[in-house]
Length: 132
Image (tube, rainbow, N blue to C red; front, side, top):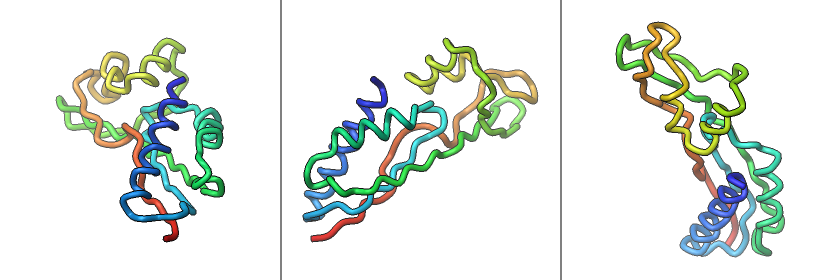
């Protein structure tokens, strides 16, 4: 269900932007999804295809996953979130609330859970192309 809510919010944001810009058609939408969102792309793609209104009937969605980068506040080590097999409960928790990653992940260098997420969180529209 998380993917459906994100897809609905995406379509709404695209339509609001198109209206502000006076676009009569929307040709392409570039979406960036942070890796920590743990989005099921198949469900998200399907939800977008089902929720698109007539003005977006032929819109192409380009979706890019933005890798997560983490920085340890204790030892200054910087690392990437890896898709190592996570326990199902952990994966689900991070999927719904990415900020909970601090509870489950630790710096691979010093073992501290005190880190900041530099990249790889959120969903945003990178660009919208259309015609007037």
